[in-house]
Image (tube, rainbow, N blue to C red; front, side):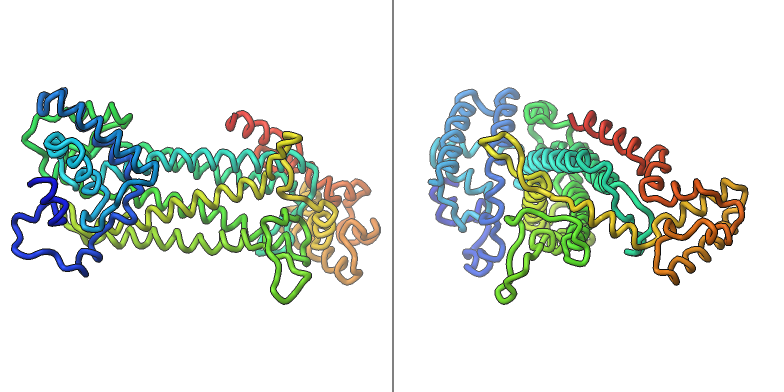
Length: 477
């Protein structure tokens, strides 16, 4: 089929058909206006395929030179915004192929030898996603560094640790932030795992059964920097595990961001007053002039549901498909693309919201999270946060833990009736609950004493928190 025929009749397969596709079906089935973002991956994969075809003597050296020249021009046109994307040509692949054939003639027609759009699109999506995972991994590292920076400045700041949103035990604010560093480090590990499984080559699987041409698939994989070749042609063209797996990893990452967002929202409220974030991450009210609303954390919390929804959509998309390729798979791209965009945008804004913005004049980061240490400590003093420390004290005096637990419950009840903290009860009152209590009990009942006592690996004692910060610094360097 000539280039003009391809352009005029719209479809690369139209010779079999006796009537043109309806305009409604054309719009319904076309993907070019969202899959055109795959253009660079499409060109990159096509060039690697063409180079292999020439090396295998399937096409001539002059054809390869023409293809390379044509692709260079197409790349320039797309980058300059001068490329005409045509709905009639359905998708990114046919748009580029048609333009290539227009530019270089028969060489452009020979490019598709030994491949199908089925293995071509699977390759393009994998190449594109691989690069996006690299960007996301860099952002995850940047966010971890930002959290570690804030943590390092707040090792000695005491925060009420909560369970059931009730004051439980005092913790270092830095220790609390490092919990999120652990979450995001696992997210980075998952992304690295997904990348390995994404970075495998389907090209050469052709439509579903492989090809009769003597392709060197390993050569193409090496050219593209891929870690392996899909070993089964049926699976190669129809597998979308990598997209589902990525979206699952992205969903978990967004869940972690959502949890952090929820805490920022609580901490920023007047009832807590633990932190402030820079004004550029908040908005005002149209009617209440006193308001500063935490729109960024709230929206991140909301966008988490959007990403999780994409995961459910992709799983549902694949659940009923027989082998091999089906048109259903066109529906994998929009949720995948939106997941990538949402996660990248969210990570970027959180990196700046947590770590601050670089001041070109001073070279220092400004803004970010501002901590109200006094408010945090005052809140920790309100909920009998050292009750467990008193129980541990009694255990060390020989009391069984269950008996110590009961004894402390009576002490807390007494403190509640006197409207004071455990540490404010007179020694004689404390001794009324257990005669073994001595004056040294007040050290363990202090917030600082409670913090310092938890000096075990993974604990909240400042010495342990500093060790964890050093570990993260080394890991993230």
